[in-house]
Structures are given as structure tokens and as C-alpha cells.
Image 1 (cartoon, rainbow, N blue to C red):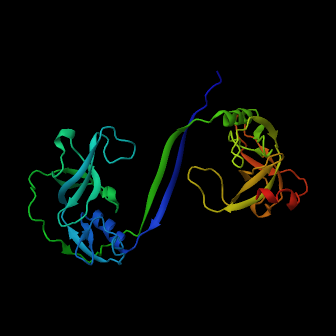
Image 2: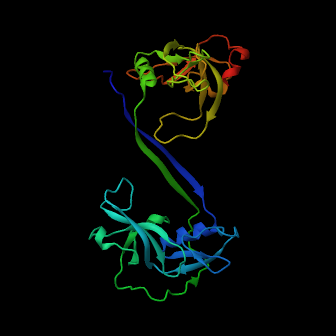
Length: 318
């Protein structure tokens, strides 16, 4: 039985966004142990605050301070926390309607006595993080607050939303960890790359050769099995100049990333172009792979020195 290939993969992107006056005030307030909501035209208080009324789409801006205590409206037990979650031990995810608010805030509840101690309607309070920077993690978690039995909710007080050194932007890291197992077609492709060969598959109907192979023709919808070795040389069809340095990527900017139609293939793959100044890369440039020592994939592609390909020979692969 052939070896089943698999590998852990991580897709990660740090998303940077600026904040408007409402979100800026909310996060700046958390840094100062103040929880702010926003009042709608019909008098409801939304926590977390939003810039526009979700019902009427009216722009909102009247900020009010609510209490750091509240009531659990619903919950779910998390028996095995994952990387980056608020607590490193089992806890409950809870929706908490803070006193003075009309909507609930999602966060973690530290429940050391286990899931039997958590129930809808229980009273909780904010546990503030020791080090606060203006993020929702400034609320370390919620904790039981048995002394604060539900009573008439205090009226929220108007707040001007002004804080010294307000938070104006955040970086939200998005990350997906998963294990990838290639199928028959891609496994053959990866084994060939280990031998510094590029192998695709030909569709039995339209006769197009796809690299990397997919096991089926995306145009005809039929299975592919005929293996075809292509390249290794190819033609730059389109490209872009990268001016922002990627995290954990040891490549100096600017550099060029291109779609490359390998000789004999009917689908362009992408790769970095090296061995030439970035401003000399062009459509039709003929390139060849540069293989790293011990690597199983070309590190980059460099010019072959051949004349540029005629546009008619690659226009269908743009």
C-alpha cells in the first residue's frame, strides 16, 4: 500500500483595522476598567457597542457606562481549552447581559467547581486583566458573583467617551490549524517534486494538462489519471510586485510573485521570480526553477536567457 502523505498546515493572517469613535471609546474604556455601551433611538443599550442600529441602520454615538456585573443568559461548557483561549483550564463560554445593558456580551466564565456550578440566571462580574492595552482581553474573564443578586438594574450613566491616549486601531490575528492529506493525484505530484520533476495529469476529454493535478478535470468534470511530465521551464503570464514584508518570510521587498505557465501545462502555477531586478520582470519572460538543497519544491524561478515568449502562446493562460 502506498504511503499516505499528510502534513500540518497553518493559515495565518494578522488583520489590521482602524477604529471609529464608538469602538475606540469601548476599547479605551476597557483599558481603564470602564464598560461602555451605546444607546439606540428607542432607548436600548447595546453592549458591545456598534456604530449603527442593527434594526433601523441609524448611526449611533450616545455612549453610556454600564456596570461590570451582570447575568448569564446562556452558556456552554468548554472542557478542553485551545491555544489562545482566555483560560488554560476548563471553563464556560457565557453570554452575559451586564447590568444596564439590553444585549449580551460573549466571554469566558471561570468556574472552578465545574459545569454543575454554572446555570442560566447566575450572577457574575468582570475579572480585569492585570495588564490592559485596550482590547477585549482586558476583561480576563467573568467570575461568579453570588453577593450581587439580581435586583433592579442600575440606570446606565452617560459617558463622553473621552480617554487619554485613545486606542485608534487593532490587530486581530486570524489563524487556522489543520492537517492536510493529499489525494492520489497530488501525492504523485509531491513525490515527483522530491525528484525535481513536475508532473501533472491530462484530461481524457479536453486533453488539457493540469499542474498541480487535481484528480479530475475542473472543466469537463471527469477523472484524470494519465500523468504527464511538464516544464521545468515556463513563461511568466502575469505578476505582481510585493512591497509589504510578510511575517516569518525571509525575503527582502520588493520582490515579484508571478503566474508561470510551465511548458506543456494548460494551467499556470504561481512562484517567486528571482535572479533579476523586480522592475525588469515582464509578461512573456522565460524562466526556469531553482531548487533548494534538500527541498521538495522550487525556491524561485529565474530567467533562462531565452527570447520572450510571444503573447499568442500564453494568452489563454492569463
